[in-house]
Image 1 (cartoon, one colour):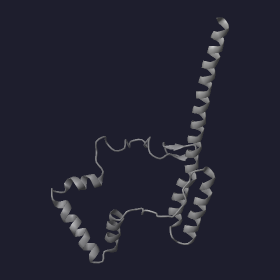
Image 2 (tube, one colour; image 1 turned 90 degrees about the vertical axis):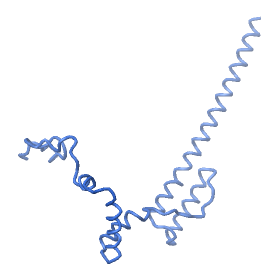
Image 3 (cartoon, helix red, strand yellow; image 1 turned 180 degrees about the horizontal axis):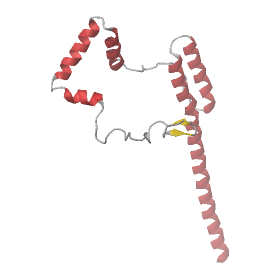
Image 4 (cartoon, one colour; image 1 turned 135 degrees about the vertical axis):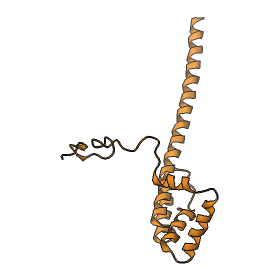
Length: 157
């Protein structure tokens, strides 16, 4: 570990840089920004048309590049799951999601995402129930305090 940027846990990434290397100057641009700035107005459309032409002519990397940017990364997932009104009902929903993954109706990653939503929903139900119970208790405390104040006023007079 002879480098000035080494730390006890190994080489340190990023700053501080080695002696004599101050890093990129403030305000400097990376290569892709310089290339984009070098384009004349109107060349963007021509470049896109050329990329599409290359992809149609069998340029597989260009086809993959274009499809990665055009096609959505996720698709809507349609499942027939029961409504969750009580926390214990989430088990039925999670069971339905597992069945859909097993049947190949949705991918495992889609199942995981939907399951996370379903698993989190009972917490919101619980929070709402707790909030309602707290409000009811606070109302009852206020009512009892008012009643106690009236009783105390009646004893004074």
